[in-house]
Image 1: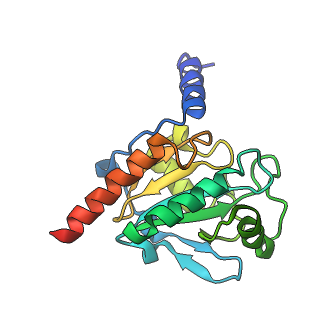
Image 2: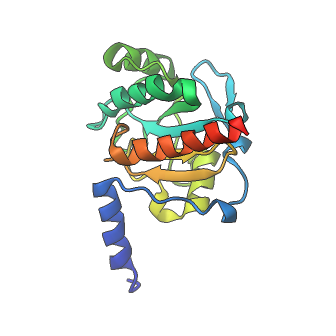
Length: 196
C-alpha cells in the first residue's frame, strides 16, 4: 500500500463526515459543464448549455436512500434561490446500494408526492466508474478522486461560466451553512456581474 493511502483515507473520511467543501481551482480547469447534456425521463436531451449564466447545483439522488430527506432541502433551495439564478438538477442514480429502484417515469412523480420536489430531474444515470456519465467523468478529472461521488446525494456546484466551483459530500445537507454560504457567495457575484 502506498504511504499516502492512509492519509487519503483519513481525509476522505473527514470530508464525508463533515460535508466540507473544497473550492475548485477554476484557472486550471479544462472544458466546461456546458459541454455536456443529460437525458430526461421523456427521452429528450437537456443540454447544460441551457444553464449558461446561472449557478447550478448537480446532485445524484436516490429515493430509497437514508439521505433521501435531502430532497426536501433541495426543493427549499430551488424555491429560495431560483429567482436569483440557481438551478437545482437532480440526477437519479442506482449506483450505490441499488437505492433507486424506480423507473425513470416514476422518479420525479414520487419525489414530488413525497418531498414536494419540483426541481429539474434527469433520467436515471450512472455517476461512478467507467460507466459514469461524461459530466461525472469530467468532474472527477477536474477536481480529483476525493471529489468523486462516494454515495448518493453528492453535490457539485457549477458556476455561470460552466466551471466547477465547489463540491459537497453526501452528509452536507442542502440547507447547511456550508452549502448556503457557497451558494449565496456565487449568487451575489452573479448579481454584481449582471449589474456592471
